Image 1: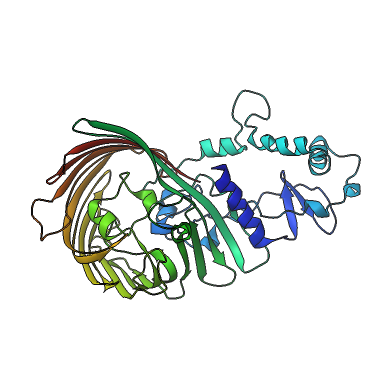
Image 2 (image 1 turned 90 degrees about the horizontal axis):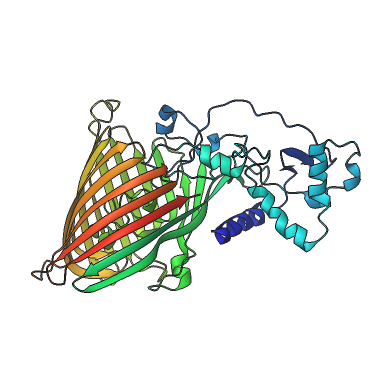
Length: 474
């Protein structure tokens, strides 16, 4: 994880260079005339959060009603640390000899590092969680802020270090940017017949940035996969998302670039909010892909839609493999009832194109949520498909999921999942029965996942798996 943060901060400094002034240990240092002065607290104003993939938001202490609203990145709280560093331009002689103890500490921090050993091990001061030595974790330390950050919502991703990794440059084309990282690791034990094995897999290891261009209605997102893939070369797998979003049209967003393709409901969802460790069979075969192109996303109280025209290429194998259309429409019958009857979504979509062969995938979805209970059903049928690989098979599958929150932080889930990889071949249906528990320590930002999966295969041996997953979003 240290490598991830190192890369994140390196990208940040390279991007925004040397700004006009800096904040160090709560003090403001100006390049023109160095002076340590007290910084007044920023005026109170409503905070809001940027949207990330699949409606992700940054947790920032909002009320429940405010969290439900769609807000723009521009409205994030102004009183966040600035990404500025002008230590090399500060003259030691500008500090008076009558410094307070705190100012003296700052002066020594800036100028009195005289050896490599001292410079290297001074970084541990940032991890001091008990500065006053009273045995308690101080609230103003990084560890204290993480522990005291209360994240309840689980339907969208939230990030533990969203405040600390959000910056507002004073110059340049970007007015605000948030860096983030994500990790999920899965320890699994599987057995079938007399064979037993234990593995540790990395579900995802990613870092990226989302931001707003200055004086425009354009946002951007970059998401990178540093983990190698055995199925593709390193650079083909390295870029996960790279796109620009324009919000000039009311109720609409225009997305241009490389982004997640909405093939099926779950297939087009963020990995960070999946209830189970693995996606359903139709999602991991038909969907869970990215494509390069342009999308139009509409959002109204009674209907959503997502229309995309893309290249049918996956993972940058070729410049243009062929044309592709992906469309999805959601109807929301209870969209104007303020949730009195719960939330009902009825959706369907089509993915069709050409990549060495013609392919067509149709999907249907029904989902309902009422208070702590939620359930959904999804069906998909394909005459050839273009997922992680191109297939000419006529495949079909469906799944049904049920979930209940016995506590705001504890969720019980179960799923029946059936998939026929080729309708022209008999006795090859695969059925998966999954039961699980999600424990949300800090929403989706810090989550423990426990899944038991029984695989009933018609043409191979049945198998069992127990999977323990950990998810961290920073």
